[in-house]
Amino acid sequence: MRKSKFITNTSYSIVIAIICFILFACNNENNQKPEEKAQRPVSFVAKAPAFNQDSAYYWVQKQVDFGPRVPGTTAHANCAAFIEKTLKDFGLSVVVQSAPVSTYDGKIFTLKNIIASYKPDFQKRVLLLAHWDSRPIADNDTKDENKPIDGADDGASGVAVLLEIARQLSKADLKIGVDLFFSDLEDYGQPEDSDKPKMQDSWCLGTQYWAKNPHVLGYTANYGILLDMVGAKGAVFPREGTGTHFAPDVVNKVWSIAQSIGNSSYFTDDITGNTTDDHLYVNTIAKIPCIDIVHMSPVSGTYGEHHHTHKDNIDIIDKNTLKVVGQTVLEVLYQE
Image 1 (cartoon, rainbow, N blue to C red):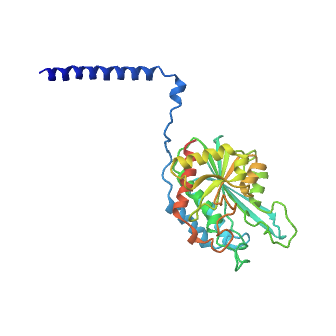
Image 2: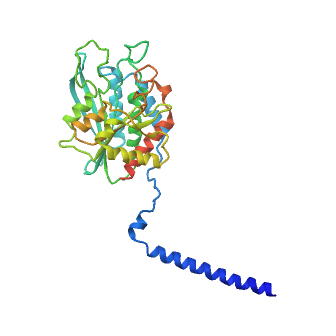
């Protein structure tokens, strides 16, 4: 019986010790300073609905089926009409800018910038943009260099992601306004081996025009996100240099959200050199901090191997890449 009595007394001691520990822990928790509690990491809570990659892929295919969207062609005109009608069908407010612009080779084209607005009366706004034209030549290819490319990734992928976001915005009730800008004549820039006189700022002509002549007088946005080449297999999106220079806080916001929802293998923390893309003129002319989500190699500073070649066709498109980018951008909007 002594043994039994010993066990009983020990049990009482253990129980009392446990109670004292719990009371001490609770008291310590209550006595913590507010700033100490705030330092505890808070789990990221995703808010956006699922981005539909099948729908986005359909939008890529639809554009490619028109043929190369080279300014001055029937395919270009048909694609413009399709984008405009689709955005209107989603119930968005749509403005089309038309204006003559001169290119490096002395030609004059009538550009068509298409801008769709979600909640146009809201003061807090986010600008999303992508170019919808395609390269008139395959200057990085070794054959048929003078023929236009399909531009499935370089052009159509960014447009497709924006169209799918537009479709989902038509069902949403966000606390911000969103403008979706489909820019024209981005990819008619002067080739490096051109025998024509050097033209300054020959790229991104549609965005340059819009930045000087916004669709709404005095237009501004809190920030902008450019999507360019966002649909290829094996794509990676390092922190692009021009956007990092002009809008580091926006880069941090977008990359942090991308990594928080599981896309860190795509959105890497490598930093590239500066690029000339539509966001350059959004930053320097429109004075809106704008970044570029673009498939680039952080080592070589080059775009994908299919860039400005005939390999940039529907076969290069990966639904999962479209999903990663679309879900990230959609989440950015829902976190505002």
